[in-house]
Length: 235
Image 1: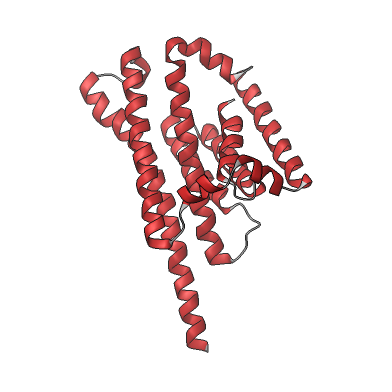
Image 2: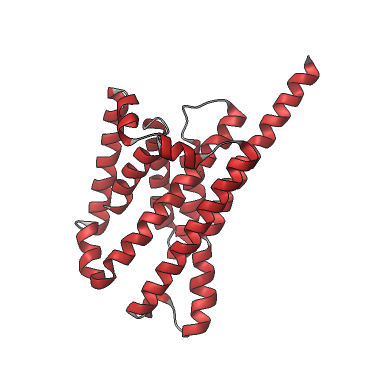
């Protein structure tokens, strides 16, 4: 009996490690943009991203999104094969309406309050509407910039999902937004390095933690989570 229990605990530990590795793989694919920007493109163009032409910006975003989407597809497929957790199937089968109906009134209140706080924070950070500011700043590049954002949210959501699976395997507690903590540590660190600002990293980390909470509040409905993450991050 004791041997059986130890075996189960060992299996649960390594299952958690597998899910954590999937989340870190997604983060590694996100890191491709650093290699593209500071390795490949800098050597080809001879200058950094701040001086790109419109065509170079578009190529950068298209290449980044292509690699990110490939990475998402690859890791999700790998997870389905090895763990039996098929996120694509989950995404197809659970509709927005179904997810909305499954949420309690309190969950809706908490989700809406969190979303509003994120939007207020973004408004303060951008001195107004981020959407309008990006539109005026980017002009013809605006659709490509937001294509990049939409794909980035997919990657962040996957880190949340895999992180949640991993830590729940270890701690058997499904009330804590572990996925948000993993995003805070990875995505926040990434923004700190790329922006060169600790404040930007902390701000992003807090946002990542809130995103993880949103995933739990939607009762793990990936479509509904993606919708609210886009609202929080993009608007």
